[in-house]
Image (cartoon, rainbow, N blue to C red):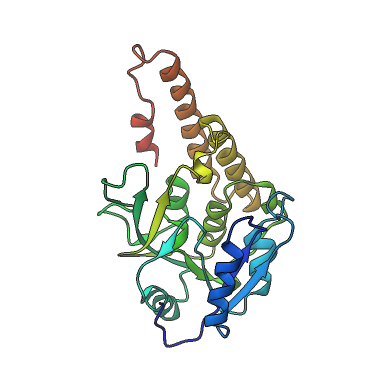
Length: 260
């Protein structure tokens, strides 16, 4: 449904799905053969340790910009791509443009909310990206040429955050307040997998931040070290609160916010 004054391609990757996904994808390709490019796998690439975006999709893209839409999410505004491309075309010093998203929690559909708050910063720096998660993956549109993938990329878990951190070094991000996609939360999502514990999240984000710190030769050492320290305290607080729910009242995060 995207309406643009430029040509675009849609790359759809099916990672050896066992339901009717491949058939549905093919039906769309038959309707829009000039736009949709399909990649079907016979062996699940994720299970082999391959990064779908970095190893398979980006190498075959032809466009100047890349926009992401993972399987859980979907776009809702027909002018999404046009608005984002218009901004980056006019502001090449920026590296990424993102927008607000509606959160759809299928376990509680009666509660309506947005991904970004009303006071979301319009211009986001590297420090802001480190400080908190504020860019929904389905809202990202960025310069392909500004994304340089390091050798350690396939070792990490948080690929979307890694891309944001790598791009933030190349230029700031611009936020558009309109909600133009849906961030969907459901019981079958990866975030609800039994292995995604507080400890798992803490270790994986800390690992990523450590690699990013080394990657940029400790240029952002102060802000990254503060974030890692904050994550450590938050994890320890989580453990204590779980073990002693009626005793722990002190929240160390309240006092660490001033350090940013």
